[in-house]
Length: 275
Image 1: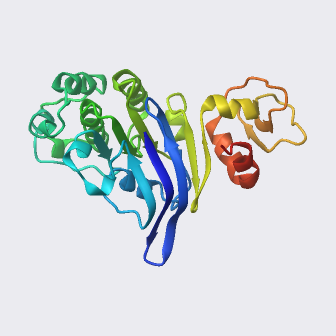
Image 2: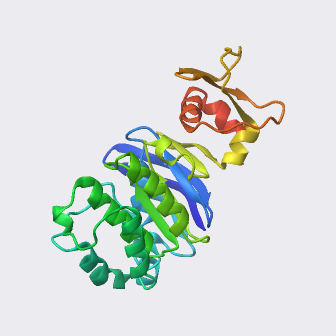
Image 3: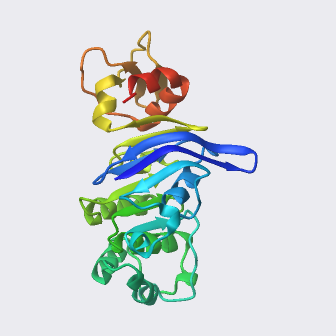
């Protein structure tokens, strides 16, 4: 389990994260959402130990990430939004660098590359942006680590590749692994991320499972506008509206509408989901 307590971090005089506290449980795929500049990438780099907290603490199964102990590093993987175009065949990179993760599985790497329709014999610096991103995703999942942190993994992927990404994540992620995926492309990941974390500037507005969200918020897809809705948006197929769920009715969570609702009613939503 990851326990974040009163975490704070600033760039110079500009605070990015302030007094952030939450727990991330095993066996979950967390969607980390937020506007530009709210600290999503900063949080990921703090979780994997690339940055040192200036306030508060992070505990990952008893480890302080910034200590960068080999036993900790061997069981976590951070995939940056910007990936390197290495002058090496993908299969050679996996063979040479996979040994740094004791559970790395070359067979899994080749299987995921096949799902992505990627050629492992191709040099990474000769790949397109999408091919390169898919190669790094394949490598990250093949390391079989307990914790995987991905920053905007679907950036640069075409529509078929995004479907392939969802298939790869759901099929090749261990049941006891914890994934934290930062994304702006919520529609790309709507069916696989659960729980959902929404960061605001220096605050956590929401950290809840889809089930918890649907228990407290009702998502209406009818054509009639409902008075008192927290959020309403016209769509080509009609209208999506978000209301307080007063009758324990079930509905499908629309993450984009949820995100907009949270930002319109920050204190209300925080109070509803306070734990």
